[in-house]
Image (cartoon, rainbow, N blue to C red; front, side, top):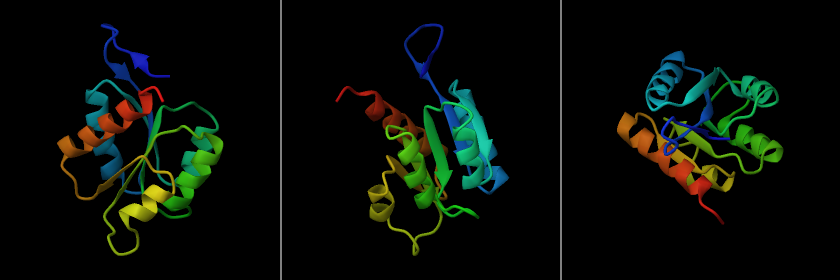
Amino acid sequence: MALEQDTGKIPRYHILVADDHISIRELIVLFLSKQGHQCITARNGTEVLKKINQDKFDAVITDLAMPEIDGISLTKELLSLCPELPIMVMTGYTKEYSAESVRSAGVRSFIWKPFRIDEFIHRFNEMMANHEMPS
């Protein structure tokens, strides 16, 4: 569903960004929007599930530790609904979750907070490029 830019070369995506901290959501939306992507936000996993049933997204970026539904449970639920959906998880918690436990849930990309925005954009772009590669 990637939207093509006017040149037809660079894919533009419809992305759902979930984090319980508004500043993180706004920062991610700001930088992804500058790259030409369209972003919709959610405050928690419950909102993500509601929005995923109302619209089609090319990717989901979610915090790991959120109220109501954590990122691992959310990932499992999302992948049961949309098995090919690329999901990127971010977290500042190092003791509760390991990168391996998150990846085993089906997450395609994982980044620790705090992160540099160039690192975030690189990981996002890498995840999407891998997603679009023919099997």
